[in-house]
Structure formats: C-alpha cells, structure tokens
Image 1 (tube, helix red, strand yellow):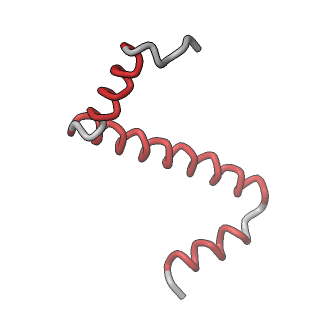
Image 2 (tube, one colour; image 1 turned 90 degrees about the vertical axis):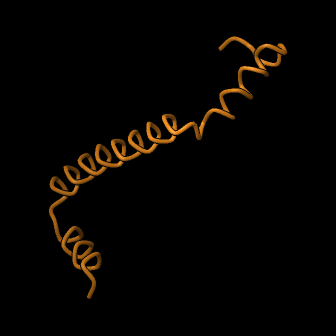
Length: 66
C-alpha cells in the first residue's frame, strides 16, 4: 500500500468534523500553492504575452465595462 493510499484510507475513517477540517486546511494549502505558481509565472514573464494581448484588445475597443 502506498503512502497516498494509507492517507486516503485514514481520511475516510475520520469523523465528519475532522474531514471538514482537513478540507479547509487542504483548500488553504492548495490556494497558497496556486498563488505561488502564479507569482512565479508572473515574475518570470510567462504571463506577459497574455497581458499584452488583453491590453491590445482593450485599446482596440474590444472590451466592455464589468
């Protein structure tokens, strides 16, 4: 049995309240991971082409107010 399989089994055996706490913790962890990846991509210039395209569309009048 792999480590992941053991964790999955243990989690399914937890009371509902503890599973809810794990869901909250995991959502925070997942959000922090996403934020870190986004920041890394932004700082590396990976998103520059997307930003340039969005600004060009806005300057061309292809956007609308939200």
